[in-house]
Length: 285
Image (tube, rainbow, N blue to C red):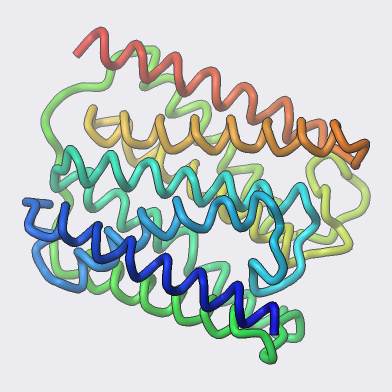
């Protein structure tokens, strides 16, 4: 009964927020890739859904996700949601074709591989007696298919402004490191021999959830090095997630819970370096 109450409350809040979102951004020029109703729904619902979902996952409210997450992983999921939410609002407030397409692509990169392995390898983790499970699959299917259809209908675009040297170097270095880290974690999530990297060896689906965000940040960085508008969006996206991961680890430490040290240090660097690169990009533009 309580599960249905929380799920129903979340749906009502989401519908109200979507109505307000369409009132503000529904007629905004989001570039050719954001012209259709489907594209606008994907863009607005991802941004709003991320901001609304983050508190539920941060406080690990039952049932707030389609499978049971360790508290620190649930807060890291909240950080990912906040990153998509803030980056989405920034994209909607200052849209361009390049930023719109980048945001759509990040949705696909984050959701599609995770959905495929969840269904193919971890389907037993889902409890279909919980309404949130159906909500999870509905969101994944709609956002992934909607983003793919929109991306395939358009073509890449840049705003023509170069990325400053320090920002470009960080996008390359950060993209390569987070990409290698994420791919290793996604491909072999259950390795117990390197606990600093494979922190959830007993929970491969959660490991892949964390890996999906690492891969998404890597893609955001590497796809943005030639375009200042996209680079700024990618840097904010990474900075929000990095700061959120550090905060999640700090909360775990406060309650004397296990803290993944490599994630704490690594994402502190991601947050600081991304904010510094963003500041440089604004000053040099």
